Length: 257
Ligand SMILES: Nc1ncnc2c1ncn2[C@@H]1O[C@H](COP(=O)(O)OP(=O)(O)OP(=O)(O)O)[C@@H](O)[C@H]1O
Ligand SMILES: [Mg+2]
Image (cartoon, rainbow, N blue to C red; front, side, top):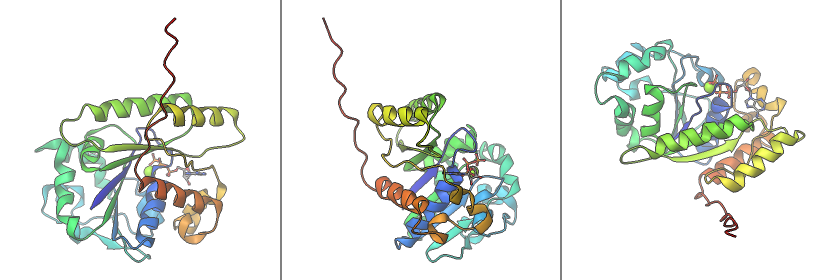
């Protein structure tokens, strides 16, 4: 079982959009896939037409009185299940604080290894005990970045934070999201980061109104418009993410003279 988490401290950068489309593509590839909507706002649950409710709430899941298995719902798509959001997830930090706080989610997910090939965690925008748990549970952190100078700082801070982990560290794969090719700044930043940082994908997700339509169609764009530019971009991203990361090209040494 491989665990992918879409994460960024910032809100509205494309975490849910990526989680929903990549989970769909994973399932379409024939992999048994689970998406856990960890955001109390329940956007991923909404997009998959699943009621954002877990009986007993987050408390029952974290305390183990309800097995994750019993809360999992099917979606309209083959091989794709959803663990819905619940409004009580807003208190998840308090619930996690009880015992082995940073590794609770990883522990809860472990029994699912026999049932799923790929698990996606869609995180709320924050840096909290929930996000720390997600980082410990994930094999790969997928970080959507809107091309601004600040987003580069966000990526560096996250990479540094993860590097400080003892034991297993997730691989950090960043990708540009909502890119407007007509904007010079977007072009400059995407090119610069691709060269200077490792783990940045060559695929960028363009800003497209068809992607916004997902909330009207209530389905992944990769499902309702599979031949669109948007779907092609997510497919290319998925292909890249499932291939090994390339190191950045060696930078020329500074002139010593
Ligand atoms: N590539 C894109 N082009 C155009 N619109 C996009 C794109 N990606 C996401 N959006 C739109 O931007 C909004 C925010 O996207 P999304 O919900 O995926 O972000 P998020 O990071 O999960 O937000 P939150 O932090 O609130 O969970 C949504 O309305 C979505 O439809
Ligand atoms: Mg979201």
